Figure 1: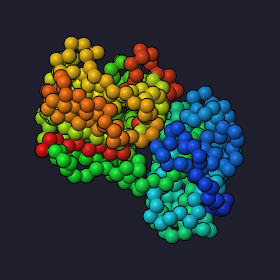
Figure 2: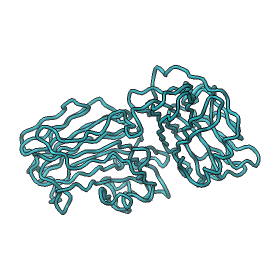
Figure 3: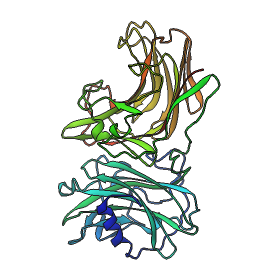
Figure 4: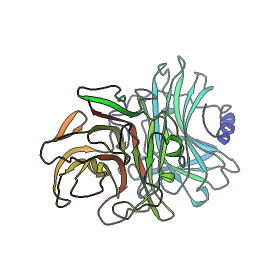
Amino acid sequence: MSGSPVLRTAWALLLAIPLATACSPGPEAEALAQASASLASVITNTSFETNTNGWSSWQGTLTREARTGAPNGQYVARVTVSGAATLYSLDGAQSGIANAPQGQAYTATAFVAAGNTGTVGKPVSLILREKNASGTTYKLFTADATLTTSFQRLTVTGTVERVGDTVDVYVLQTQATSGNAILVDAITLEPTGGGSNPSGEPMPVGDLTGWRQVFTDDFTTNVPVGQFPAAVSSKWSVYPDGWKDTSKNGTYSPSKVVSIQNGVLNKSLHTESGVHRVAAVLPKIPGANASGGLPAGRYAVRFRADAVPGYKVAWLLWPDSEVWPRDGEIDFPEGDLDGTLSGFMHRQNGTSGGDQDAASSSARFTSWHTAVIEWSPGRCRFILDGAVILDKTSRVPSTPMHWVLQTETDLSGTPPSDSAAGNVQIDWVAVWVPK
């Protein structure tokens, strides 16, 4: 069992609460746009667009309200604490999977926000629960956050340990006081490939034809917000807090943005104290030069993102020389999070930012994808989900470059809305060098 001391106390109380009998509905025909790639949620009323059927609240009052900027659709669930209760939940019988297969991993997601200013700063948890047929809790898997007025996406993964148990999901606020309320939207519960494989595609391990693997990270070490990269400083560095991003509308704030939980590195994009918070992380690749660069390499990343307006990714190889556009630049994937994935190879001896080769796709960030840059002397290829979308052999950058997973505000010239918030998730990264 994991979680904070406050939550462990809350769980002790929850164990004694009788729960509605769980049912096992069929998968949805259409997965949420914010959900993982092709996995369908077993929850049949994920976003409260029509009603709150299938959901209830323990020690709270459940209502439904229209919300501008709702993560999915136009409505969210509002749960308000009852009386003097200090904890309350949103749960529902329809979210359960009866007789879940032993050894099967499940992933739950939800968007949560404070329903009023009095709830800001309070703890909230998304909880995946394994219980026996009579409703007695056996194990809890949690994703914890501190409530803000902006929606945050929580994700938790757990693996069923016993035969015949039921799995369900609920949202719990603790340390509640009178009038506290939470907003919840887009709740999903899905089978996954495993706790170390939340995206459904395992991290590649080992050499490939012509390539020797030198770096991997499957993000198996949990790191709370505020402790990255210090907790994993042997493998990662960052653009430090306070640096401005490319548009100057965002501020790099890894101490408030980056965390690792349940096998995923997460960047929580949001606005806090009027500052649009973004992050850029850099792997420390063995054999790299003092600037972190290599003269060639194969770079792979498995990722997805919420469609957050006003933000983008530009995950790139940047010249160690810092001379641009002369020494080129390789960007893949790049694109606004509410748009599609593209890639750009800025040519060696470039004379302007537009001196480049471009690749486009119809893929959107809201599904899991694998992007690969293959950069070797005289050749640059972009591979998206196994398909080559760019292959160039002319004016390929030829100076050492370092890899930056740079997530920032977009280049429209307009700052993002203060209410725009969401997550960029990375399941794994891997790097090879030419043999």
